[in-house]
Length: 248
Length: 303
Image 1 (cartoon, rainbow over the protein chains, first blue to last red):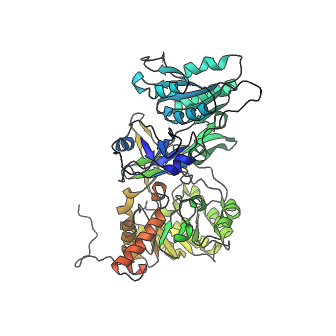
Image 2: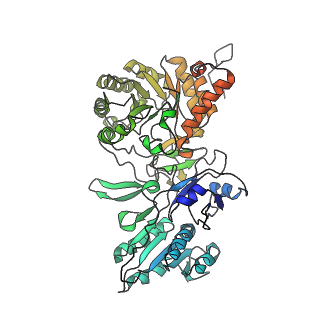
Image 3: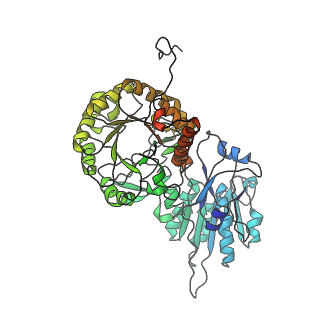
């Protein structure tokens, strides 16, 4: 879906999101957090979002017509930290790890990396071949794409972490990981990264009523102290976190 | 207050979070996130769950604590031309008193709102607000601890007869009543057969509770002679005016702030415009103007 939203388009950075109204009614009541998927064109007037119909909110969103009006708040949150430039050394390999609808956050990042001359590898897992989207878009930006499906209908059979694991085991320079997907995937990716000392940013999803840091509903547990974990807001302190700083 | 529309506790942070969405000086006032003596981290997630026309929350009263509020939050609010109300809670009467005492006399603070929905850990975890004698006692104690600030008492709806709670608050020395807080509820994930909220139970808010809250305002207005701040599912001008007709002197917008951060201003302007269009000279002329049917007393539910 493409939104005409110049203010958001100009300000947005990869990894940020918008809170999007899905209809005029009250049921469902809340706006939906949506990753900024792309800001196409040099004029930066439009924002694209990519969503999958999974519930009532996204079903209503899918019934919006061209020319309709929806309220959108954004861009919100902190986006991805761009990969470190290493003076005199080769650029670290950049790995984008996507699971399911988590893919939606990466086209914008891939565009930004492409402009910097960074050629990431995309590791992309989904349930079946039919759930894999936007592959051509990534290939056209020079990304190497490696796929995994749970039913083996395309790419490796199994989870995307099976593609990631061997890339972190070698003796070579550490890659940098950018991951977005279901919680179980982020947990596994984060654990692998921490084990192997690999820099890793996780873009989290959460039940997010407000998106602006006041409802305190979207928190993620983070390492705390003897009194227990501390909680950080995914909306305003994320949605991107360094893997070692969160317990997803 | 310059208008009767406020933002409700727990939906408006400490005020300044909304600086980029609305001009605080355009709303009547706002109520801070509930303040305890020490900072609280709150409950483990999931803390919220969307439900039909509403949402459940079990945040666990996470807040910065009264000291940080006074040092870091309140100074930024002093040059805002709006009424700042500090919501206060405790797990014991002593904690309520200690927080209230700390707030008494704070420059830039206009009132205290007492949150009685907090579990009383000294009495088996029952919420303070579910027992009229306990309400009276804690209100009295806070009244003494903060004699210089108007005392608003926020009632929980999770009680058989809210009028009894209202009378107890009045007898304890409340200046104003605000009602209602959220209704206890839960959500279940059928696939896993687990509660959706880590806390199991949460507070229901949003348009789903509006008729319940409206009735409670109506009931308390008839029974207790104190100003009422009405709330519970208000998201439009029409909702706000209905609460005023039922007897609210002012209203608070809560969950609607999550959907539309400018909601309090939109409603405040809407109320003003409605009065102009109807030739209502002052918005207070709307308060308690419900026209009840003539004849025998209604109220019993015959089904």
